[in-house]
Length: 141
Image (cartoon, rainbow, N blue to C red; front, side, top):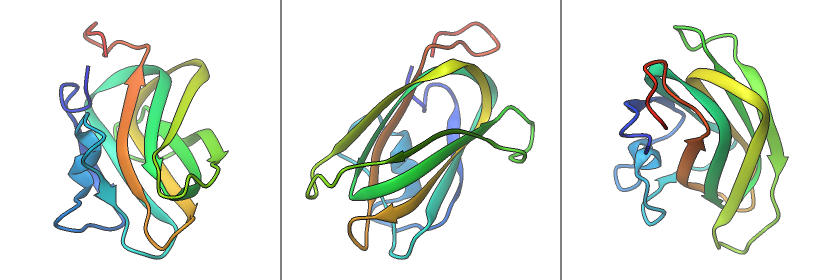
């Protein structure tokens, strides 16, 4: 199930460009993307209308050097716990694909990603996908 199908929305982003808006993160295509607007750190929060279970994630970016991901099951986007911190190699403007399996399934209501550093003044997020879980209503995601 795509992020859009799971009723996810971008509830916060540190930057926005009308040609490369944060809502592009929700598009399953890797041909559209959210472009940061300069200085680091840059971040976004995805909010799910209904909590989902997450076991695996796939994050596709460009020019990202270092990022950290957080999640919370709280109704409000607070008290996040770190789920992944990673430094990526420089792919010279090519796509960087990060796949990660968590130690355990997590209940996620809000997901936050902070791009701490980049290989260029601008970085991009092409897609983010979650797997291995069900919504609280039992839908595969």
